[in-house]
Length: 251
Ligand code: IPD
Ligand code: CA
Ligand code: CA
Image (tube, rainbow, N blue to C red; front, side, top):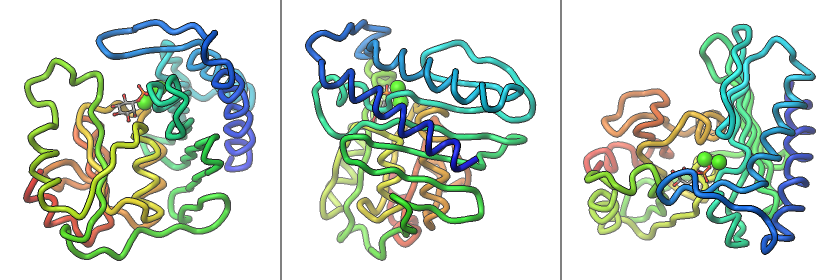
């Protein structure tokens, strides 16, 4: 399964890169407030659906850009381009995300950032890798020394609770903070120690299914904003474990 996912995600990366190389001519539409979709998102999702379902015809498929197809107990959960806004601006921090859920549990995850040339992969119980090398969360023990990441989604553009107050609160107490623009990658960055923690609200399962498994397999805690263990897309907090209690007080 890992071999199949790797092959397909690398190929999807090539397709996305071809679109990014001719950004001025690609077709972009607005799905909702501050929510853009491009030809690239659609083409990559169609490719992933075709290839993954050809290999596993009885599996379901949930992707961001098309209607869900029901299948057996297993389903693919896919974000064809996580970080469309970064992609459109010719930036580096966007990724392709593929997760495989079996009997309600995410068992495989892969996140590939073509411009960074980084492929993260994990299988439940077997650890996580970046470009084939094992990864581990950071050793940072205090928030005062921590580098944290977050996101501000289009879905929250009009919400009163928009993460800005929480961001300000936490930023006052940390060493530094980042907003990379791809929730899937943010999770992986906690996994390999580039970030000590990441949080975001109102995400969708396809944003974080693969990334959260990769982070967890690298030693990260995955909880909601009150510390309840598990993946809750509406409130995702991923940490290196060591700064969990400190950051929870500020969530
Ligand atoms: C978005 C990215 C971004 C996050 C948004 C997501 P998309 O995904 O993950 O980092 O802040 O919440 O919607 O729309 O580019 O696939
Ligand atoms: Ca996404
Ligand atoms: Ca997307």
